[in-house]
Image 1 (cartoon, rainbow over the protein chains, first blue to last red):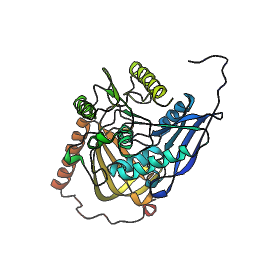
Image 2: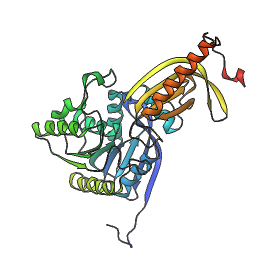
Image 3: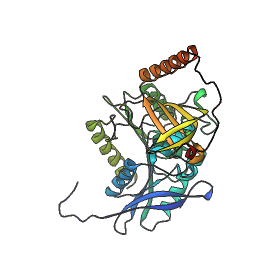
Length: 251
Length: 98
């Protein structure tokens, strides 16, 4: 909780980092001022793009004491407004999982190289980023906490699989290597409550550490204050859950 | 997310300028601006010109169905009147139209 006499400061800027195949991509980094050590956060933007909401989200994690990096997962798809680039990636069926994992691993490595990062690193994502956060927590090593906010297509039917996304993330549940927090709206169509049930059953089956919170009166993207999906009460509670979870897992 | 692409030839206006449209990306996914969870989205684009060469519309399901019916009706009427120009559009640089 804030104290009115506390000091606080932050640095936030775009930078470059090495992602999949060692290729340079750009990223947005925000960190508290001071020598730390601070826990790290990889912040995965949603399907609509690497946009202003995600800049603010990255700064929010920094504001709460994390060195946060949000890699531009669409770097290779060209540059323009986030919406135009996001629409291009949508037409392609989304970013390829292998490339995304390479970029997220690169973001983890980047954080670990910084002298003011504690060595504890979490990963957060919403929408497609929620799916990718779960996937990364299963497929990559080096994450200590994962947050999946309404990640659709963790459960995928065979007809939804593509060369770029060849395996449903739920298939990798047995390899989940860190605690998982999931936030979902009960009116969401992707994932549906039934799909969240399936994911939860798989987590139980493999005795994974997780906590799911499901909100009535909320659908997909209820954190997005710039969209009609925003649900104030659920969003405020969800953010509290996020920081309480990180306080326990990245301490 | 459901996304299909169709190759086509036409022109689109983005801002003050016209550009050559080569593809239409049709998806059923989260819209950017329409206050719905899912919408029928059409992006008229030219991939060779980069992501900014894009004319976007986001439609409700009902609006999309009405649009399809209306396009078909207009084309059918033009056909009945004998004015349908059923020729492939010749691809020329958009600046030639300015």
